[in-house]
Length: 210
Image 1 (tube, rainbow, N blue to C red):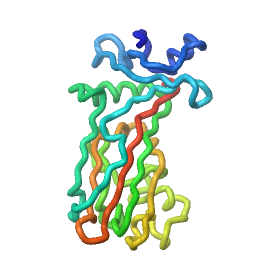
Image 2: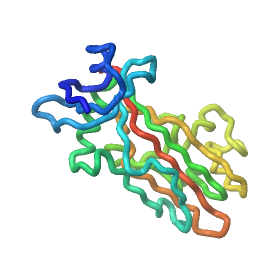
Image 3: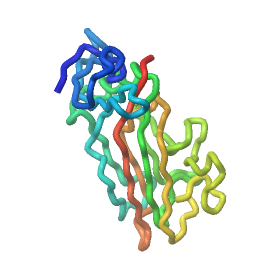
Image 4: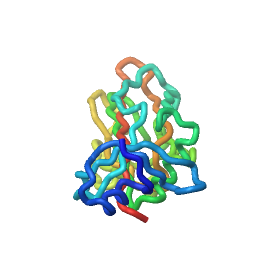
């Protein structure tokens, strides 16, 4: 573990091009801010610019079954070992970085994600309900990546919204900095026979300097 007076892993790498990947303690908002945090610095990814990586307690692929009402399945995502100030600290990291991203995926069998009245959504760092999926942007309301490029099953806005008895998936990267990290995941339409889903949420990854 390395303790440094830097805001991000990118800053560490720019100061020391020979810095190696590993655990570092950084301080995104500096003295008088919300305090330091431990992160993993990937010094090889993204053309070796220095990527700040923060994990959480919901990285494993998880099943959703037996939750019919809209958003009735709820998973709170905990970062930094449950640090009370985690959201503020990570907001500082995101604000100090040029780019941030988080992978999100939903695998579905007869389980709707959005449609016109969402069964599923995620919650932003501002505790707001988000109804765009990975590969889409905030302007792409109720859309997944396939809805942006018009390649969804059944000409829907998400593959899962065709709601048939075939395993399908919607996945991609969330890249809107002001919404990250993901704080909560909500799903529904898995209460009847043959209805189920699986979700995966990746680590928060940030690089570059603002």
